Image: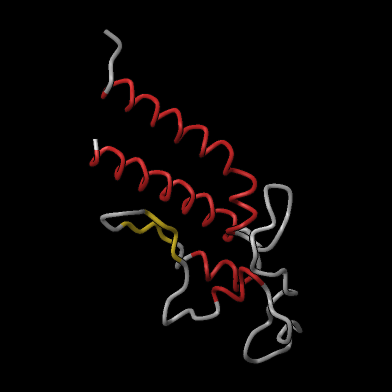
Length: 128
């Protein structure tokens, strides 16, 4: 059962990472570049989405925007406007590709996830 839950958690993270990559790939140059760093990861206790790398340290700026470096002629970065970095709920909030993907596809991904949990529970605790 534990192995199945770990697999299920990682599948959810992979599905979200794939959807986020697709969203970022349709964005500006920085977002398209940042899409290459989006990945699902797992440990013994949880699965997560990671983004950014040493070679692409601007990934979080591509996701959340910038308060200072917003003009396109900037040599360092031409980020879009700052959108904040706090979850704003299902109807709005921060982000240009990760958070919008969560808001758009999260309910369906969670529905599928909970259906799988229910299936695992039925297998583990069948009715007599």
